[in-house]
Image (cartoon, rainbow, N blue to C red; front, side, top):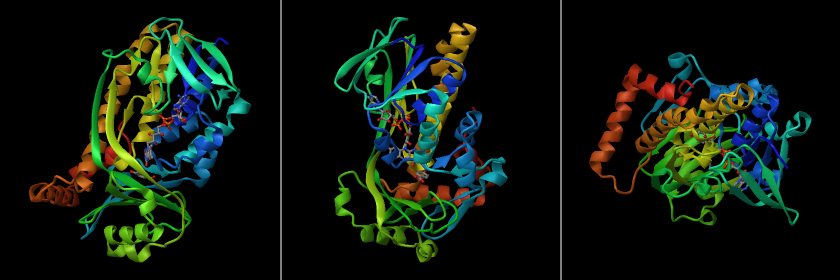
Length: 389
Ligand code: FAS
Ligand code: PHB
């Protein structure tokens, strides 16, 4: 089979890019290792920047998001004593939309057939070939039969553990990484949220986040040592810890209920640069990872896709070879700023095992400064709603 672009991975990055290219008449095909149900079963991001909403609007796939998504004008930082509200709407003129990544992926998936976007699910043993040439190919196994896709460009949207980044010969890129000494235990439950906006809490017992998916479905997190096992955390133990860490007011409003999903995710900051090698471009988690503290992961994938789609459309439809050459620098300029924000908010809101009284005093001083400074709140707000493209 011959296509212009072969996309590896049918998560949000792969499907967003596939639809954008298909809408421009660029022949592409998406290869996904898992089944559709498996992809939809992964519970991940919940907060969308206007960049991500804008791509869904551009595709005309924003109807359900507009009907069911929750526009949020602010978020809160808690430190056990007080709640510091960051009024992002007043400070930046922008808001964020609370709408689960699962729903974004579902909306994109359901549009594939009617829009003619080819996605091959359950594609095993995906391998990239001749990525340094202008005639690369991808092989995979489907129903026991090996198949080959010849293409002009490959875009790796296959997440942190996918084969794309690993296909780049060693020494042809640089890895920047920080692994955090804790993970986030997340719980999803069909109970009303304890607050109408998100609360990020730095408590003596540790970090907690109160989020939601709707007015009837809540998403909560606490940080736990990386050695913890989710089976050691009963629902009751999680609810008890959340009530302690989120503070007395929030605790009074927590509605407990059985978890419908509960898992522990490791936290890391990671960037692979450059995000292009020959005929291979990387988008989303294939190129970078942020700790979820700043709600940037999915939104960075969306901005990568915005840049990658623009470059590929200019390359294929206007014969502009420079477009692809410029992709990595353009994408990384925004990636690094989001990496900084996610790292700094993680530093501010978590108790690190090696921290002593001085580090704790610095956290308290920074929260005090934020509480009293419009400039500090504006800086937080403009990063939270997403920096300009
Ligand atoms: P994805 O990982 O979503 O998609 C990659 C796709 O490639 C997957 O469908 C995978 O099956 C497929 N793939 C992998 N290997 C393949 C192969 N060999 N062949 C074919 N296909 C292959 N971000 C936030 O903003 N907020 C959050 O709260 C948040 N929570 C998270 C919790 C967890 C547990 C994780 C892991 C991530 C979280 N993230 C969060 C980040 C997450 O949302 C990502 O940023 C987002 O999924 C990025 O989308 P993609 O780049 O499409 O990668
Ligand atoms: C979520 O709702 O899953 C969520 C929200 C904000 C974050 C991380 C996760 O920073």
